[in-house]
Image (cartoon, rainbow, N blue to C red; front, side):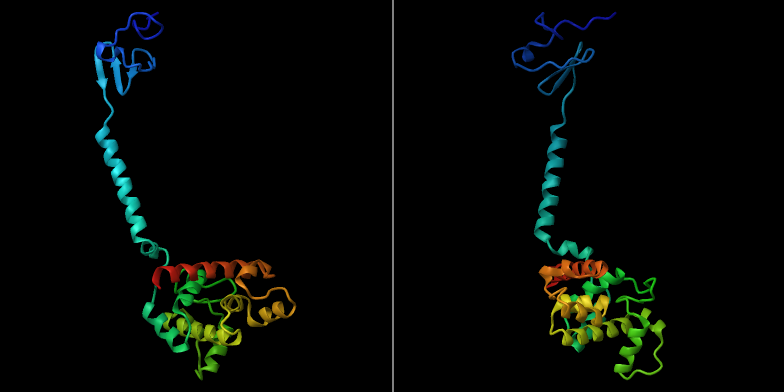
Length: 233
């Protein structure tokens, strides 16, 4: 059996060069390799030295990336909160006097910005408007021969969605959580919750909303809304 070299263990003579004998370095034995404060020795001498320059470069790159993220916040997060169809959204929002960033928040929650989105129950387009609701909106606006398939057209969908949000905003006195809840569950159901004392319409008591789906929806839209305001306002 081959024995470890002299100096690898115990208090015997040390085969390590004199430059390292008095460093107090801990010896890690593994076959014929011994480590002394960053130097790896074999029987014939030094075979490896850590690459300090590489480590330093990685450290500085990490610091620069961190600074870039901090200094450009919150703009960099706009990748996750874009403004699709910006001109259409702003035009319709100003026409009906609602916050365009609330519209974007709803679009993000409803369809993830997909024009072709259609829910299992039939809601369509960017703002996921039900055909029956769209037909009622069309009648309120004096539009004849309304085609439900036009809800996949961004201009029609955004215009109808903004009109509907404005109508809910007037009815619920600008209470955003209530407007959002009514957009999801219907104004009739929301009035029922308020009358029965199940929810007072405040953002602090969203967990009191009886419908689980609406509860999550309101939280999601309000989170999106805050993000859009932080990024763009």
